[in-house]
Every structure is written in C-alpha cells, then in structure tokens.
Length: 233
Image (cartoon, one colour):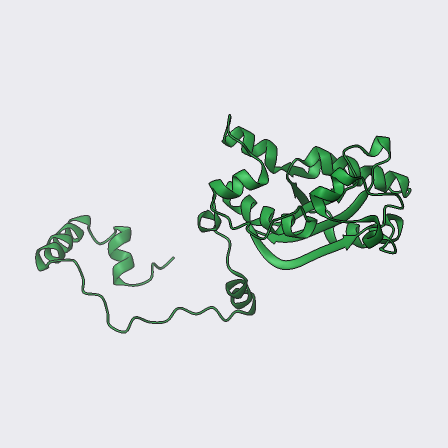
C-alpha cells in the first residue's frame, strides 16, 4: 500500500488572514516502510516573514525570494502524491493551507477523506499524554536530535518513522522487503535444501500403531487408496 507522509511550513497560522505556504515535503511509504522517494520544494510566499514564524522554521523572506511560486510547482506536487493516502500530523492545519493555495491557483482542493491524522490517532492511543512530534519521538525512541528547528522534509522523514511505530512497528507487518519483492517478481525465490535431514520424532511404536489403524479402515478407505497410489476415477 502506497502512502505519502506530508509536512508543510507556513508564514503563520491562518491562510484566511493572508498567511501562505513556504515549504512542502512528501516522503513515500510502501507497506509502512519508507522507500527513499521524496518530493520537496520551498515556495516564495510573495510577502514578508513574521518574526514568530521565522523563529519556528528559520526561513527568511530573503531566502525564499525567487523560489518557485505555488502556482508553478503544484502540478509536480500533485503528480507525486497521486491518489495515495496522506499521512499528516495535525492534518487540519496543513490541509487548510494546501487547499487554500490550490484554490488560489484555480485547482480543486484535496479531499480530507484521504487523510490519516497521526495526531488524532496518537491522542486516542495515548489519552492524556503529550502527543507532539517531539513527545512521540521520545516515547517511541526515534532519534530527532537533528530537529533543532521545524523543517518540512526532516519532519516528514521523522513522521514516516513515527507512523510505522504508531501502527505497530515494522516487525508486525507481513510486507516483503524490497529485495524479496524483486526476487518473487522475477521468479528467483528458491528454497535451499537442508544440509542434513531432520530426525523423525516418531517412534517405532508410533509407526506400528498407525499401520494397525490403517489396516482397520479397509481397502475402500480414501487413506489406503491414497497411500497405495493415486485415486483412480
């Protein structure tokens, strides 16, 4: 199952008051394992950067000037996510910004039905506890030492790890690894014979008792017809 872990950075808290997206990042996950494929873009918001937002992510208006405008890059973003489910921490925040930008660009908004909110899920799983990204990383022992500031790509990579743990960890899935999937697809998956045959746990008394039981079934019994050879129609 292909899913996309997504995160954004913005100039503030509400697109309705003029705040804009400044960074968007996506990490591809297949059967709860990150594939290494990602999408990332900074975005020129064409406005100033409030000091409180700059303290959060460290992206200045000067740095963002000349980066792609949303209306020029959203096609690549939509191509990457396709119709996959979106995994977002505090999804309502990110989705309202993404959809506000899509509508401004003349594109249809994304449906919230395709979104899995890890914050809402964590609150149900750990009621009464802090469920921020940092708190969850500490709970699930995920290394986030690099996270000195918010950054969409780093946060998406960390969230991909966290999502795997929230859903039970990699060891609980029945998904095949990438290498195994390739071998199966190419028909190269083989079973090597044992170096030495395992010793039978049956005793001679077990064998004799089973033979005596078979003898009581008669020649017409399916068992006796099978052990004597293929059943003839």
